View 1 (cartoon, helix red, strand yellow):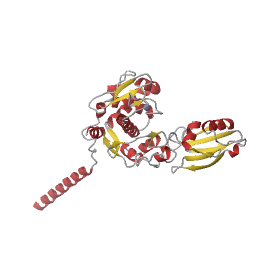
View 2 (cartoon, helix red, strand yellow; view 1 turned 30 degrees about the horizontal axis):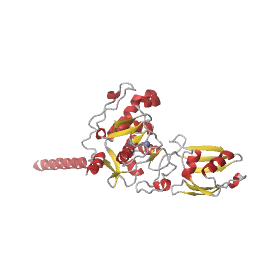
View 3 (cartoon, protein in one colour; view 1 turned 45 degrees about the vertical axis):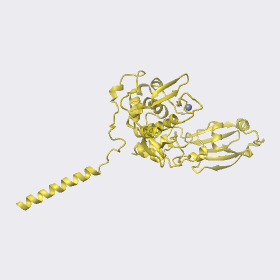
View 4 (cartoon, helix red, strand yellow; view 1 turned 180 degrees about the vertical axis):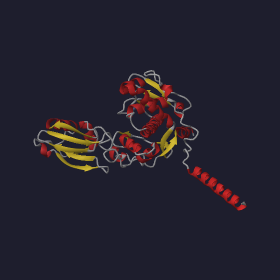
Length: 351
Ligand SMILES: [Zn+2]
């Protein structure tokens, strides 16, 4: 009897020890997130109809930072959190997966920090950022988002607020400083490095595989058709020395590809024209270009949309759908960068 008691006591102790081991092995929230429990407001907080919708504020790190924003007609100062809701809403489809939206929020926050910290802002000296997406980042007000989303406004607005609030204060760092967290819409199989697009190599902006496909992305494959005459005049405006004679078949020569498979340069009229320049001249969606000459036209076939550097938004969404969290997505597209807090960034500034 005594022996049975001892054995059952041993078994109980073993079981207890085992469950403690399991509990220890469970993933804990990272130190960064501990103590800032998902303080996201409940949907009822913003259930009041737009356009009076306001981004709730509270004890968020994002609300301790002010951003001066150049709107077309005025400069306004916004709390970082409120600004980011307008940026994420303007830059990424709200129907995307939550983890993709969080990744976009962190990239946008990081980009904004680099603008706040920049010592000189020649394009808009009175403001950190502007609302022109071709220069800084898109920003849409609640009113503009109402127009875009219609009856989905309440659900989508809440979703974007959640993406910003759940990542409150999180940014991407390299060597202790916020990175150039550039992003684009979609890539053709691989992202481009900053070196191949801007001639500026950055260790965390290298070419990586990107997982979006034509099934995921609207207009993933697109084409632009220009007549022989328009092609010739457009090239000559930019390159007056290009030799474009009467025979169009002699106009377009060899092309070289960048490491990510985009056009590096293509010989046109005897001149090496960068793919990036070709994209601008003909309004192409990317530099993943195939060129075809027909009897009457020059046809550009492109894949993907945007410069191709950094985070691919549709690629992020594909990763999120396959189960990746926003941290994995960011570590994939910004290789070698790390996640940190805005606190470190500004502490670094003061010290
Ligand atoms: Zn700007």
